[in-house]
Image (cartoon, rainbow, N blue to C red; front, side):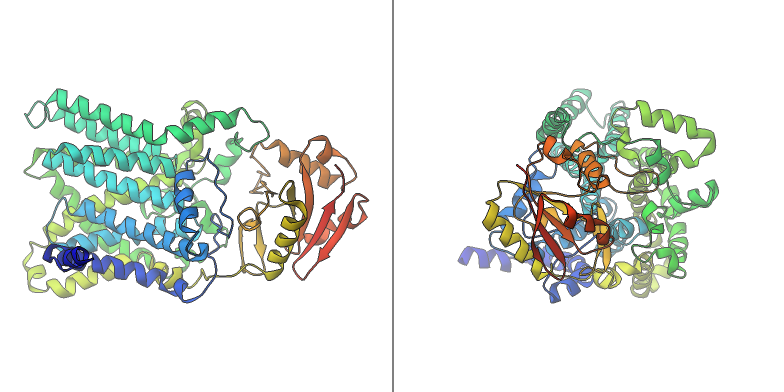
Length: 556
């Protein structure tokens, strides 16, 4: 214990603490309201509950293994809030890593780091609950920071650390195989090009590249094997049927090609912003003006990079420009009319590219590149006389401008996300099923929707019943997005839809050996359409409460 206190009182530890304190305060300003109230945070694509089951064939299984371990001593609702807060903190620290490669000025590093968090891309994804993607984004940004560090310092361990971060980013969001791959190729080409100038040795680079790739494969091997195993089980939603309908529905928003291009450059264009699930930043007057003020500093930074005395940073600037243009093109996707056929060909024939049914994710690359050039620009700005004379006020103005790019990030995402508790009668039904079935059968959850509005959340969210109920459940896999009803490829779901269409008069559930013991009809959305359950002779009503009906399935 004495050694711990000595470590805390150590001057270096104190200095590190004070350096990180502003980052911690920013995260606190965003997330603090959530910790004032018990309950869970409910997002469109992320819901937690008291039974966070682990799918060991999922790439997220290591994360949820840790979360379940912590859940033994801490409430899952608290862990969920900490999870979101730590992702925001990670993104800030990743920005810090990138910026610290170019300047020792701690406040300029902090201001640059804010850009990585306060932007429309992060805001939109946070409001939809895509925190796996945001976690991967933070890890990728960290990887880029270390790749740049290796370019400058030539220290071997930097590229190995970068490989670990890229591997983890791919694990938490497979889309980042492409993002991490492009950045890796860029830096590998830079390293090879600089061999001729004596900066690197060819043998050393090839050896490090081999270690780099090995780390990525090894860290992701478990879920890749799981994916292959799942592909042979036709009853699981493992073979998602992504079609051209997905490309049209999830395309980058914009009234026309030029408007879509503007959206991408401004880091908006997310398909979900038009679904009325949260306050769109476009409804916040003048938010884009902040970026327009910051943009000249970013452009200045690009030209500063081109004139850098260090050859490696000059080449880096050219390389990032190429990646920037490529990312814009891919983010626009089929919105570019003359490239539409090429985009469809990439979609159909490039292995694994079907994960990009939603191309706006490429904006993640733009955010990182913007931050690199912003840091260059800030370091140049700091040399101007007017800055030196008014550095304090200019730093504050710059910080405020960056935060105003996504002001609704503050104070619980603009107060839009508030902790809520599951209804008490859900717990009553859960105890009844557990006591009477010993979880030897499954519970069918109706209404049959993947996303639906709940009275206790006051918003549309992913169906959370699989993380609430103790025994296994079967819930909707039908996303019902435009022309897409259900692309899960799940045979169980197809059987249930047919059973619902037949008003429960067919025996298809029994014929498919679904092992259903109970049916819960939640009194939400269109639940009255399922009143036919009362006329099905092999169902008996066991319980009715304010929020649900519980039926016993009496066929074996």
